[in-house]
Length: 387
Image 1 (cartoon, rainbow, N blue to C red):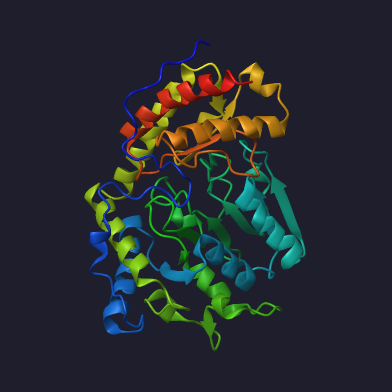
Image 2: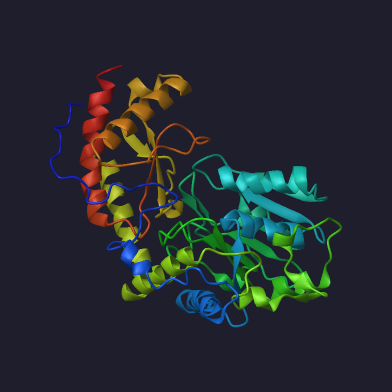
């Protein structure tokens, strides 16, 4: 291919990281002046903000009746692990993974919890595992959207109703961007720093009535740290789901999440946010279709993520290189565009195949995605000439 000319128009926002992700358009620190700073999170004013974050999440996501929402420590990871430690062990377990974070839950189940009758189903990067191998009687743990692989679930027919089991879904980069059948899931977790561009360290935990029943009727034979405990005296600690957090939250982050919800509502809620992500994905699909050196890591468009989109280089000059050499090539390309203030942090995840990962969740303007692709073409030509 001929070297592409250096573009003139830069993205207005160069933030294409997959987490923490770009702040919403129009963000300003001045918007956080109403935060409950310097106040106890137990104070009426601060607790009201926590309760507002919970209730507005429930409303915007249109959760089924009876589902509880809570704010918990340690981001999405903390939310997933507190449920694995508190709920698993009563029944057989099926775990499905196809990327880095899903494999973390495999490690937890096998090496930390040492669960008996635990079946693991692994898919390669860019490919989903066979969900239809799920056992009807088994608890299930899976990720809805593979942030590091660019692959999402599109079919949920394999989740068959069974009130005696629980289904735990890590949905952190899917909530607010993809269609999720909440009624089929018992535990749904996400974090503020993904689709809504919020700040890190806080997890959101959604529990179905079935999940609550498991917590109140099953006591696992293992010690539970304080931040994992969701019951008191054999009953659900309802305070967690009313704004009384287990440990001290950042009220500055809470305020930022509330303002992000304002922005989401101004766009029409989930459908408006999803439309922005879908538009950006279509821009990338058009780019790949006319570009001969790159392709999607996820080859099946039906399961291709519309948030964290992953790419592999197909140019023979790159594929002939060793993995270390390919990683060095990607590092040079990404560094070049960072020096140009065009795009930051869009290289593939460290455990994924060498390539690019471009976040196009709703806080990223589709027009910036449009401006980014010619810059990648230019940078590719510049770096390939150095081989």
